[in-house]
Every structure is written in structure tokens, then in C-alpha cells.
Amino acid sequence: MKNRFFLIASLALAFAFAPSGLSAQSGGSWHASEETVERLSKGQTEFNYHEEKVPSYTLPDPLTALSGKKVRNARKWIGFRRGEILELFRKNVYGRVPETPYQKSFKVVSEDKNAMEGAATLRQVDITITADGRSLDIHLTMFVPNKVPKPVPVYLLIDNRGPANIDASRQVKSEFWPAEEVIGRGYAIAVFRNADVDPDNFDEFKDGIHGLLDRGVRPPDAWGTLAAWAWGASRCMDYFETDPEIDRNRVAVLGHSRGGKAALWAGAEDQRFAMVISNESGCGGAALARRRFGETVARINSAFPHWFCSYYRTWAGNEDAMPVDMHMLLALIAPRALYVDCAADDLWGDPRGSYLSLYNALPVFRLFDKTTAIPEAMAPLNKPVTSNSVGYHIRNGAHNMLLKDWNWFMDFGDAVFK
Ligand code: GTR
Image 1 (cartoon, helix red, strand yellow):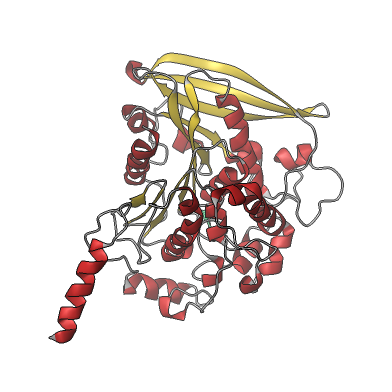
Image 2: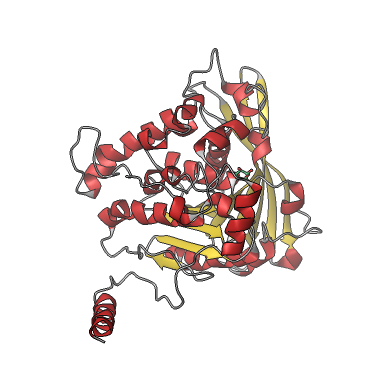
């Protein structure tokens, strides 16, 4: 009886003192279904899907500088700590963009002012990158809403799923890039194919932008394919800056899975992106590496050796020694808007580890706005948890990006952009 009284009293206190930025939460925290855990564990015995088997770990503190000094305000974060962490990610995870000079040009190759029965303008732009007489084209496709005052915010997708998902003719429609719905909500929507910048295969970096810009022997921190895709997103941003219908201060970059990893890195490297959305980015994306839940640093390096810089392999099976973890990548987005989402059946991508990563990035967001707060306890299923410039949801179902996800991205956009 007494215990019950204390429980009720402490719950009442917790609610009374909950920070104002907290979303209301009904329903309990999500946890993986036992059936999913068992099924995945049987299929992949070398990987851990059991929460109770996650090793104990200590995360590096984003607010303790390399000198050991504590960073206590936004000025110091911007002045040097952010740069230290960015460098650590370049050296240890994604690699560094070479300094090879190149030229770029934009060409509107087609325009239809009466697309979607007059609701939107379809614009297709070739972004041509030239170096030493050779060139590469990034094909940017975009729909801009006609009946909305300009300039408009835009959602830019790094597409890793192939052309059928991003059909400019709209004969084939896919929830992966739901152009009509995004236009209906007053946003522009844009996309480029990751393969335009760098095909997703391990060819010793001969093709794509690496073939164009790399010179000499690649050092251990040379950029990998994810960094190349992120770089491609920045070239689209270069174009947006020239398009009077697009609001350069309200550009969201997003991607699914490997595209989500690239979107996070794009937002870290290029602070012109006002919002980053990471959909089920998992290992090498939003998920904390030290948890070793689902996909691990060892496995991602052996399955996709081209995605990261070669030095990243140093941390395979050695996660606790890494000078960074992925909460620090998320912190690099602050104070801009950051949304992370996961799918309940996608334990390979560690939904809880992605939520905890966001939670542990909060001390940096709070340097800019003290009212930013989300609970440490995992989010409930199908109920976004948002606070100021951060948000998270876990959707029921499999690894994918669906209209349901996009609707929550746009709700977040409505709160942040409008
Ligand atoms: C998986 C990979 C993940 C994720 C996914 C995807 O095979 O292990 O890291 O990126 O592919 O991109 O769909």
C-alpha cells in the first residue's frame, strides 16, 4: 500500500516537473516483440537481438573537448568542439573529401508547369561536375507546388532504391517518394539517385565521383561511398541556392537506410541543410555502435567495404575504443532540426539504439535551447516524440520508408519550418 502511494506520488511529481518541450505520451515504451527477437536470432546467430545481452558501455562525452575541458556554451561548441568532432568522423568513419578542383554547372533539361494536373511544376536539372576534361552528371528531379507563395521549403531525398520509386512521369507512384502528398502539403520535393554520384559497388573506387576526383594513392581517411552521396546532396543544395522558388534556408535532406546514413553525414558536413531526416539508418548511421545490437561495425565493413573510409575497420570488434559514437554525429546537426525514425521489425537497424543516440545528443541541442527534452525511456509505437528541433518515431512494420513516415516528417516540418 505504502509502495503504491509512493509510486503514484512520484509519478505525479514527474509529470509536474516534466520539461515543457516534452510531447504528451500515452501508451508505454516500445519494445521488440519476442517473436521477432527469436526469429531473427535463429536466422543470424552471430548477431545480438536480445536487449539483456547488450554489453555495458560508456559513451564519449560530446561536451568534453580533446583538451579535457568541458564545453559549457553554444559559442564554445561552435567555436571549436563541433570542428573537433567533425574531424574525428572524417578520420574514423566516413572519410575526407579530396581537395581536387572541379567545375560545376546547372542545366534545366525539362520543365512542366502543369504537372500533377496543375498542382506542381516539374523541373529536371542536370548538375554537371567536371575535372580535368572528364565529367559526371547528377540528375536532380523536383516538383514545386504551384499554389503556394514562393520560396518554398523542400525535402531532398538521396535515393538508394532505384528509378521506379522516383518516377518523374508519375505513371509509377511509390510511397518511398510520395510526391503528390508532399505537394499537397505545400512543400517542394526533390530527389537524386545515389548511383549518379557513386554506384553502390566495391570497385576499388574507380567509378563515380571517386574516379573523377581522387588522385594518387587513397589514404586511410579517403572518402567512401556514403561521403560521396552526401557530397552529391550538397551539390543539389548548390543548385537550390540558384532557384528562386526554393527557400535555401528551409532545405531538408533525407534518406532511407544507407541513404539515411548519407543524409546524416550530409547534414554534418554541410550546415546549409536546415533539417536532416534519418529513416532507419542503423549501423554507421543513427544507431549507437557500442551497443553491438543487430548490425555491427565488423559486419558492415565486411559486407560494404566501400561505404566508409578504410580506417573505420580499426573499430570492428573494438567499438569501446572508438573516439566517437553516433550520438556525436547527431549532435553535429544541432541547432538545426533533426528527425530520426525506425521500424519495429527492423531490429537489424537497432531502433532503441537510435533513440538512445538521439537522447544522448540532447546536451548539445540544449546548449541552444534549454527547453529541448525527450524522455530517456524508449518512445511508444506509432507515436512521434518531438521537442523543439528534435524528433523521433518508431513505426510498426518492416524496413522501408512509407507514406506514414513521410506524414510524420511533414508534421515535424510544419512545426519547424512554418
Ligand atoms: C543492409 C545494411 C544496412 C542498411 C541496408 C539498406 O544490408 O546492412 O546497413 O544500410 O542494407 O541500405 O537497406
